[in-house]
Amino acid sequence: MKILVVEDSSAMRRVIKNTIVKFLKTDFIEASNGGEAMDILKIEDDIDLVITDWLMPAVDGIQLTQFIKADDRLKDIPVLMITTNSTRYDIIEAIKAGVSDYIVKPINPNLLETKVKNIIAKLKENFSQEKIGDITQVANEETTEETEVVQDKEEVEVTSENDNTEPESNNTEDIESKEISE
Image 1 (cartoon, helix red, strand yellow):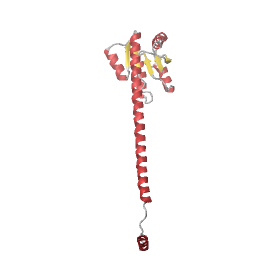
Image 2: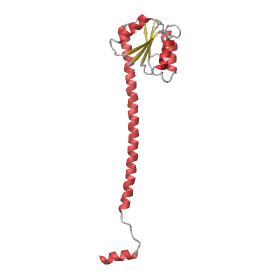
Image 3: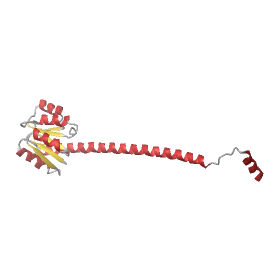
């Protein structure tokens, strides 16, 4: 698992990372603003979760989230927003932008752990559903192929049965000679 932590405060990035490593073995990539995070996301293919602040210089957390959700390659990456913005309007704006969850600073380590674990559980569930879908599709394709093989085999067997029958002779001499010999 790889987490991108986007926060303009290096101390806050450290708090987030130190909290998460207590319950999850993961790799971290850090960015000090949304612009740096966008550059990272353009080249990294294996980011599983983005944890971002809202208020940052250059590109803020909402703009970063909108960038992620607008990109077909990135849109399924969950975004956890951690911010001092705590009004109902702020939370609604973040949800509309596409955040998966929201934490108001100061960070409560237990709440951060719960939120991250919930996001990971959803990731695993979605991954399992995808794999189940893939397995079902493969099984359906194999069943279709087996049915076609069985149908082909039945056609071959029917043809073979017809080939093993003795041809009837229209020759009267053959029929008469059979009757005489009996």
